[in-house]
Length: 169
Image (cartoon, rainbow, N blue to C red; front, side, top):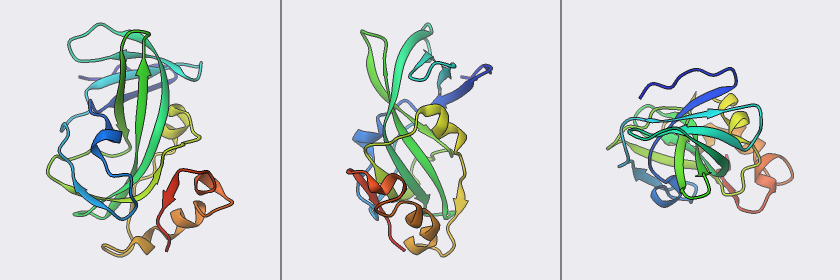
């Protein structure tokens, strides 16, 4: 499905619950077995926490949305690290959690969890605007994410909140 541009934010979501499918432990590796394409379109307007969801074969619905968790993942093959978020959506009847990723996910590919936060403080628009996939400096070395780890140390950034787990470098 092709997302239609809006004046605010348009993103596509993978139709799987990352909280149920991805490890929440820094340093743990996994093989991605979810969908190959992000097909659910989400339009987020000027009012934080609300948007319109268009799933394949369904009519668009207005939804409340919130980020429930964030991961920094590193692709074991390319050493590119990127963020992924669990986005909870509800229209009053339907409650689902889908995945929004700053990079394409490839079924069968191994990824490593570099950082995890189950209490994210960004809204989806802020998260989408922060897309900065980066190459890990040294293959398979968590210390390659040293700048991220420095940002997430206790007392500064996401690592200062309970529930944050991050790599140290």
